[in-house]
Length: 241
View 1 (spheres, rainbow, N blue to C red):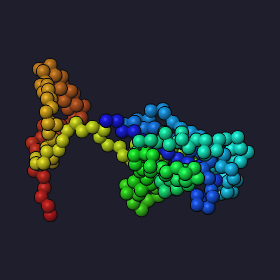
View 2: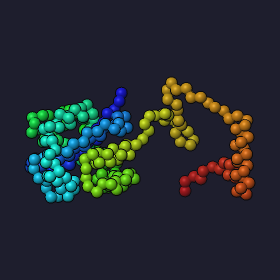
View 3: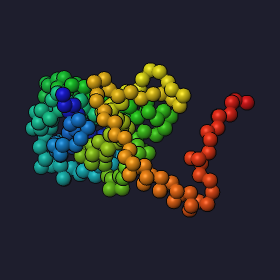
């Protein structure tokens, strides 16, 4: 079964959705089975009001630029359709969800949670993974070696793209289990067992393989001009104390 996720970000006229601030940009990217599909939704929105000076300094989207853009009512159905049935990933979800729910409420529509499968706050995820550290999107990009040099101003689609890289880095692991850990432990740690029902071929080294291997070891011996460690008898590990 495919896992469909949508990374979502917004830009707004200010910080207070309840006080009348509005969405001016929304960017969404689609992940299916942890791979970007190239399917995206990006819209600028005419908020029908001015941006706060502090917000304008962050996103740089002027009223003149937004004047001919569609109003949120014109893109609401498109947004809802894009996120329908998906797990939606948002960094600091309370902020974006608050704005989206306020926009939907103006249109007498249910909130975001009613039209998607689940909402994941990647900021909360980052705080669990990195307690006590800065977990802004910029800080996470730096921590995971993700270049954001082109991010001079915030943009919804750009931030969604960076969030995709950050999320995949934070949740990186085995995409599929090829071995299971057996409950018992051997002398050198856990023993590895093949998955139930798996048939793994055992390929023995040929005489030619053994001869080549021996030649390489002999060459290493000559170059180092000392007795190699693999010829020494194993020594017991020292006990505590």
